[in-house]
Length: 221
Image (cartoon, rainbow, N blue to C red; front, top):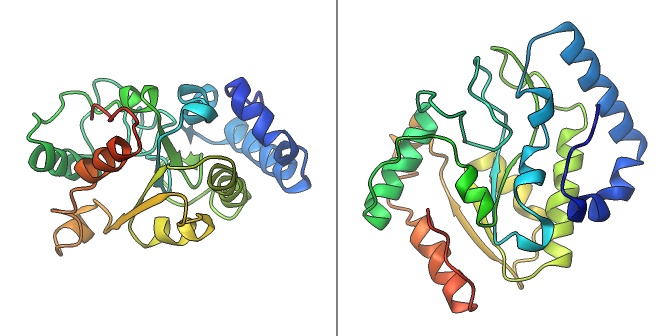
């Protein structure tokens, strides 16, 4: 499998790609894509690392699995392909965006424009088998994305990490909170949001306030 990522990420992660676990992971993914229907498309597995250069990252949003229904996942966490119906979590993300920043709910669920502004849309697991949530967990992706988070924490400063839900909060243990801003809330899924753990977190305005305080351009959410 071709690891199609920006040169800046290639330099940062070159050692990771040579580790035994990563080679085993790629072998597993190759076999899965040959024998099963998997998402996202193979050429979009590393989309997050192609859409947002290492040096341009301002915000890191951590998801869990790619969407596992047909034509949804596009390699960016919480994002769906152009023209697709918004999944429930994305519906709630857009509702919070609307109330937080008084913005219209977007027609498109493709979040590529966030990535282009420096939002790394990182799923903990980058692939999934069709209609089987969590099917590619514990194969090595978690170690890889832990390494990505650790690298960003160590090599960069003044980043905003958005940790939505318990899974993302666990991933956030590798973040140096003395040099980065960490904003935590419940997950936007209906299960969490309807219990009062999501709405009103104001993560979008708080992210922009922090970026502005560091002299950085705000994200046009």
